[in-house]
Amino acid sequence: MRRKIIGIFVCILVMITMFSVSNTAIDTANATITESHQEGIVIESISGGFGITARIKNIGTASTTVACTMTLTGLVFPKTSTQSFVIEGGNFQDMKVYVIGLGPITIGVTADTATVTTTATAFLFFVLVK
Image (cartoon, helix red, strand yellow):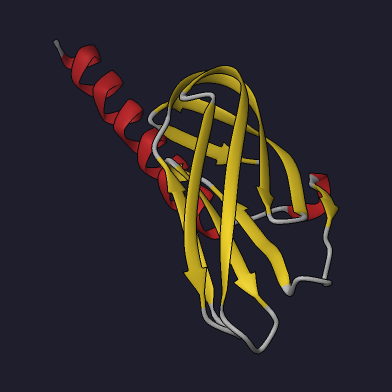
């Protein structure tokens, strides 16, 4: 009985650590970034935690409508998510996608002509972006 309680406690600690680390630590060294500043749209970051969040920023001065697509490969669901929103000049919008997966995955985000691809590890609802 005591071993079960210790095992459950360790599992909870590991999950809490995954959640807090993946929300604050973003390593963009492994990301392949192709950005186009022509439209004034850039993808600032991709972070994990409870789902995947991509931060889309309008570096221009005028508001613009942005169509964003997140494509996921690996043992993860959903495989594709598309969202569209208006971003005012100089502001950002977060694209949040909740996933269920297990193991290594590849995340590709496209916002207008800006594209970012990175890798991550999924553990059920939690995602740790590398």
